[in-house]
Image 1 (cartoon, rainbow, N blue to C red):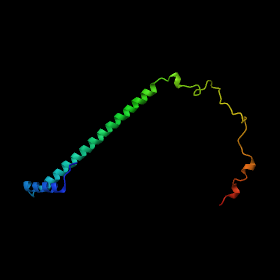
Image 2 (cartoon, rainbow, N blue to C red):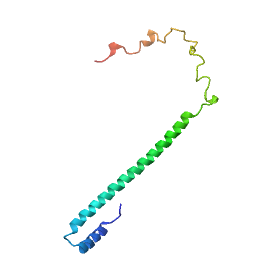
Image 3 (cartoon, one colour):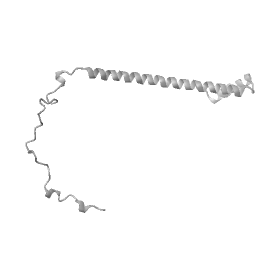
Image 4 (cartoon, one colour):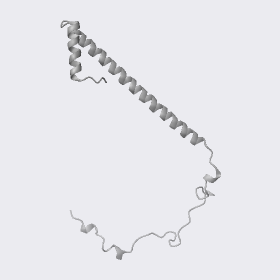
Length: 122
């Protein structure tokens, strides 16, 4: 937070020792440490509170965008005929090469080169 070098801190300590005296120096150092800790805690809590408020504002903006998007009406150009079925009974057409009830199963001659259960290593 403060950019003091070791030399500057030593000079401040010597000046404080001469002004206050060696008897009261530990008490003043403790008080200064308490004030410094309280100041750091206050700055940390303020920083986190500001970050939370900024995040909350961003989330509110996103929620408003989503709410606006959800309330927009769809234009007829947005809906295509392929997206919506015309009737409830409409079923997709079957391919010409597949007949109803026919399965895609390879003949046994094509399975000969595949390993079977007897080829497993236990």
